[in-house]
Image (tube, rainbow, N blue to C red; front, side, top):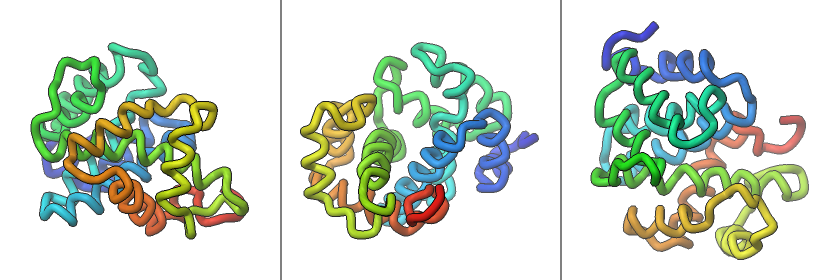
Amino acid sequence: MPDSHADLLDRAAAWSLLAEFTQSDNLRKHALAVEATMRAYATRYGEDVDAWGVAGMLHDFDYEMHPAAPQHPMKGAEILLARGAPPDIVRAILAHADYSGYPRLSLLERGLYACDELSGFVTACALVRPGRVIVGLEAASVRKKLKDKGFARTVNRQDVYRGAEELGVDLDEHIAFVISALTAVAPRIGLAGGPS
């Protein structure tokens, strides 16, 4: 079990923690998708790629145990702190839930919020394409599906729009960036075609 900051910043240790609490293949793929977008944005902004990646991977690790507010992500934050997670990562995870009472102040916090819902939405868009592939998915297609309230109804559109605004990026640019980041890890998140 990880018991130091360095351990939980190690990708393998973070994955082990995720796997301990998350059995759902879809939730694990979502964790990998958000991790990939966070790593890409960390690189773009010159931030700590490992810290951003771990925040993305672990943001919903407690969701199966505590799927409803306010337990998620509060209970998860308690577990992370007990396991020695860095406070900035824990705070980012808390801040990704609007109801948590933690305003998004840092770039890490705004990045996680911006990447979470949009990564899930882009994944949903890719899964309904022929072959279930992300390669070739265009930002305009994702933008069009955002307007379709019947598509991927569980994705909060306001979170998607607010996320881009808080991160200070144009929504179309943000969508294209997320598509690119997810395309790079398509086989790991079930978006490369074939059986998932």
